[in-house]
Image (cartoon, rainbow, N blue to C red; front, side):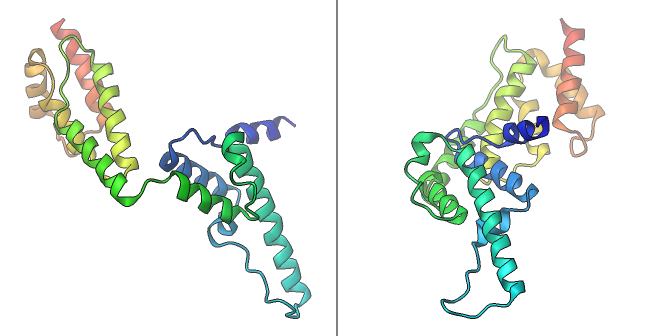
Length: 202
Protein backbone atom coordinates (compact mmCIF):
# COMPACT_ATOMS: atom_id res chain seq x y z
CA UNK A 1 0.00 0.00 0.00
CA UNK A 2 2.85 2.36 0.82
CA UNK A 3 4.41 1.80 -2.61
CA UNK A 4 1.09 2.66 -4.29
CA UNK A 5 0.95 5.94 -2.39
CA UNK A 6 4.51 6.67 -3.52
CA UNK A 7 3.53 6.13 -7.17
CA UNK A 8 0.60 8.52 -6.77
CA UNK A 9 2.88 11.22 -5.37
CA UNK A 10 5.33 10.72 -8.23
CA UNK A 11 2.77 11.77 -10.88
CA UNK A 12 3.81 15.20 -12.24
CA UNK A 13 0.99 17.69 -11.58
CA UNK A 14 0.18 20.16 -14.35
CA UNK A 15 0.82 23.67 -12.97
CA UNK A 16 0.29 25.70 -16.13
CA UNK A 17 3.87 25.39 -17.41
CA UNK A 18 3.14 23.02 -20.28
CA UNK A 19 6.63 22.48 -21.74
CA UNK A 20 8.14 21.52 -18.39
CA UNK A 21 5.15 19.39 -17.36
CA UNK A 22 4.96 17.53 -20.69
CA UNK A 23 8.65 16.63 -20.44
CA UNK A 24 8.19 15.23 -16.92
CA UNK A 25 4.91 13.50 -17.80
CA UNK A 26 6.33 11.88 -20.92
CA UNK A 27 9.25 10.54 -18.90
CA UNK A 28 6.84 9.28 -16.24
CA UNK A 29 4.66 7.48 -18.81
CA UNK A 30 7.74 6.01 -20.48
CA UNK A 31 8.84 4.60 -17.13
CA UNK A 32 5.46 2.87 -16.90
CA UNK A 33 5.75 1.64 -20.52
CA UNK A 34 2.55 3.48 -21.52
CA UNK A 35 4.07 6.20 -23.71
CA UNK A 36 3.59 4.27 -26.96
CA UNK A 37 -0.22 4.18 -26.64
CA UNK A 38 -0.22 7.90 -25.74
CA UNK A 39 2.01 8.97 -28.64
CA UNK A 40 0.78 6.53 -31.29
CA UNK A 41 -2.68 5.56 -30.12
CA UNK A 42 -4.26 2.11 -30.28
CA UNK A 43 -4.02 0.21 -33.56
CA UNK A 44 -7.72 -0.66 -33.79
CA UNK A 45 -8.56 -3.38 -36.37
CA UNK A 46 -10.75 -2.63 -39.36
CA UNK A 47 -14.49 -3.06 -38.75
CA UNK A 48 -15.69 -6.65 -39.25
CA UNK A 49 -12.12 -7.75 -39.87
CA UNK A 50 -11.48 -11.26 -38.46
CA UNK A 51 -8.79 -11.40 -35.77
CA UNK A 52 -6.64 -14.18 -34.42
CA UNK A 53 -6.55 -14.85 -30.69
CA UNK A 54 -3.06 -13.30 -30.57
CA UNK A 55 -4.35 -10.11 -32.23
CA UNK A 56 -7.29 -9.93 -29.80
CA UNK A 57 -4.89 -10.31 -26.87
CA UNK A 58 -2.64 -7.58 -28.28
CA UNK A 59 -5.57 -5.16 -28.73
CA UNK A 60 -6.88 -5.85 -25.23
CA UNK A 61 -3.40 -5.25 -23.83
CA UNK A 62 -3.16 -1.91 -25.63
CA UNK A 63 -6.62 -0.88 -24.42
CA UNK A 64 -5.66 -1.71 -20.84
CA UNK A 65 -2.46 0.34 -21.14
CA UNK A 66 -4.48 3.20 -22.63
CA UNK A 67 -6.90 3.05 -19.70
CA UNK A 68 -4.04 3.17 -17.20
CA UNK A 69 -2.38 6.04 -19.08
CA UNK A 70 -5.69 7.95 -19.02
CA UNK A 71 -5.90 7.37 -15.28
CA UNK A 72 -2.44 8.89 -14.75
CA UNK A 73 -3.30 11.87 -16.96
CA UNK A 74 -6.56 12.43 -15.06
CA UNK A 75 -4.62 12.49 -11.79
CA UNK A 76 -2.07 14.95 -13.21
CA UNK A 77 -4.66 17.49 -14.37
CA UNK A 78 -6.81 19.76 -12.20
CA UNK A 79 -10.57 19.31 -12.23
CA UNK A 80 -11.23 22.65 -13.97
CA UNK A 81 -9.06 21.57 -16.91
CA UNK A 82 -10.24 17.98 -16.76
CA UNK A 83 -13.84 19.02 -17.31
CA UNK A 84 -12.90 20.43 -20.73
CA UNK A 85 -11.36 17.16 -21.93
CA UNK A 86 -13.62 14.50 -20.41
CA UNK A 87 -15.14 13.92 -23.84
CA UNK A 88 -11.80 12.58 -25.08
CA UNK A 89 -11.90 8.80 -25.40
CA UNK A 90 -8.21 7.88 -25.44
CA UNK A 91 -5.01 8.96 -23.70
CA UNK A 92 -3.67 10.12 -27.07
CA UNK A 93 -6.68 12.43 -27.54
CA UNK A 94 -6.22 13.85 -24.03
CA UNK A 95 -2.50 14.43 -24.64
CA UNK A 96 -3.11 16.10 -28.01
CA UNK A 97 -5.85 18.29 -26.49
CA UNK A 98 -3.53 19.48 -23.71
CA UNK A 99 -0.81 20.20 -26.27
CA UNK A 100 -3.15 22.30 -28.43
CA UNK A 101 -4.51 24.21 -25.44
CA UNK A 102 -1.32 24.96 -23.56
CA UNK A 103 1.71 24.70 -25.83
CA UNK A 104 2.40 28.12 -27.28
CA UNK A 105 2.51 28.59 -31.02
CA UNK A 106 5.92 28.55 -32.67
CA UNK A 107 5.80 32.32 -33.09
CA UNK A 108 4.88 32.91 -29.42
CA UNK A 109 7.62 30.58 -28.21
CA UNK A 110 10.16 32.35 -30.44
CA UNK A 111 9.12 35.72 -28.98
CA UNK A 112 9.44 34.35 -25.44
CA UNK A 113 12.89 32.99 -26.21
CA UNK A 114 13.98 36.32 -27.69
CA UNK A 115 12.84 38.10 -24.51
CA UNK A 116 14.77 35.59 -22.37
CA UNK A 117 17.90 36.03 -24.51
CA UNK A 118 17.68 39.78 -24.02
CA UNK A 119 17.24 39.29 -20.27
CA UNK A 120 20.28 36.98 -20.22
CA UNK A 121 22.45 39.43 -22.18
CA UNK A 122 21.65 42.37 -19.86
CA UNK A 123 21.93 40.31 -16.68
CA UNK A 124 24.24 41.84 -14.07
CA UNK A 125 24.97 41.05 -10.43
CA UNK A 126 23.34 43.67 -8.21
CA UNK A 127 25.38 45.57 -5.59
CA UNK A 128 25.09 43.69 -2.31
CA UNK A 129 23.59 40.59 -3.97
CA UNK A 130 24.97 37.31 -2.67
CA UNK A 131 26.72 34.81 -4.95
CA UNK A 132 24.02 32.24 -4.19
CA UNK A 133 21.17 34.62 -5.07
CA UNK A 134 22.85 35.73 -8.30
CA UNK A 135 23.42 32.14 -9.39
CA UNK A 136 19.78 31.29 -8.57
CA UNK A 137 18.54 34.26 -10.61
CA UNK A 138 20.81 33.38 -13.53
CA UNK A 139 19.90 29.68 -13.57
CA UNK A 140 16.17 30.50 -13.46
CA UNK A 141 16.61 32.36 -16.78
CA UNK A 142 18.87 29.67 -18.27
CA UNK A 143 16.42 26.89 -17.41
CA UNK A 144 13.55 28.80 -19.04
CA UNK A 145 15.66 29.30 -22.16
CA UNK A 146 16.51 25.60 -22.31
CA UNK A 147 12.84 24.65 -21.91
CA UNK A 148 12.08 26.90 -24.89
CA UNK A 149 14.66 25.04 -26.99
CA UNK A 150 17.82 27.09 -26.50
CA UNK A 151 21.00 24.99 -26.65
CA UNK A 152 22.94 26.78 -23.92
CA UNK A 153 26.35 25.32 -23.10
CA UNK A 154 27.67 25.57 -19.52
CA UNK A 155 30.77 27.46 -20.68
CA UNK A 156 28.54 30.22 -22.12
CA UNK A 157 26.79 30.58 -18.76
CA UNK A 158 30.11 30.55 -16.88
CA UNK A 159 31.63 33.25 -19.11
CA UNK A 160 28.51 35.40 -18.70
CA UNK A 161 28.58 35.09 -14.89
CA UNK A 162 32.27 35.94 -14.70
CA UNK A 163 31.91 39.11 -16.77
CA UNK A 164 28.78 40.30 -14.95
CA UNK A 165 29.99 40.11 -11.35
CA UNK A 166 30.26 43.35 -9.32
CA UNK A 167 33.69 45.11 -9.35
CA UNK A 168 34.66 43.79 -5.90
CA UNK A 169 34.93 40.33 -7.50
CA UNK A 170 37.40 41.48 -10.22
CA UNK A 171 40.40 39.90 -8.48
CA UNK A 172 38.47 36.66 -7.89
CA UNK A 173 37.33 36.51 -11.52
CA UNK A 174 40.88 37.02 -12.80
CA UNK A 175 42.18 34.34 -10.45
CA UNK A 176 39.56 31.81 -11.64
CA UNK A 177 40.15 32.60 -15.32
CA UNK A 178 43.92 32.11 -14.89
CA UNK A 179 43.75 28.94 -12.80
CA UNK A 180 40.77 27.10 -14.34
CA UNK A 181 39.97 25.73 -17.77
CA UNK A 182 36.53 27.27 -18.33
CA UNK A 183 35.64 24.60 -20.91
CA UNK A 184 36.09 21.93 -18.25
CA UNK A 185 34.59 23.90 -15.34
CA UNK A 186 31.03 23.13 -14.26
CA UNK A 187 28.57 25.78 -13.07
CA UNK A 188 28.50 24.19 -9.60
CA UNK A 189 32.31 24.26 -9.42
CA UNK A 190 32.32 27.93 -10.40
CA UNK A 191 29.83 28.74 -7.68
CA UNK A 192 31.94 26.84 -5.16
CA UNK A 193 35.11 28.68 -6.22
CA UNK A 194 33.42 32.06 -5.96
CA UNK A 195 32.08 31.28 -2.50
CA UNK A 196 35.53 30.15 -1.30
CA UNK A 197 37.24 33.24 -2.73
CA UNK A 198 34.55 35.50 -1.31
CA UNK A 199 35.49 34.41 2.19
CA UNK A 200 39.00 35.78 1.56
CA UNK A 201 37.82 39.23 0.47
CA UNK A 202 35.31 39.80 3.25
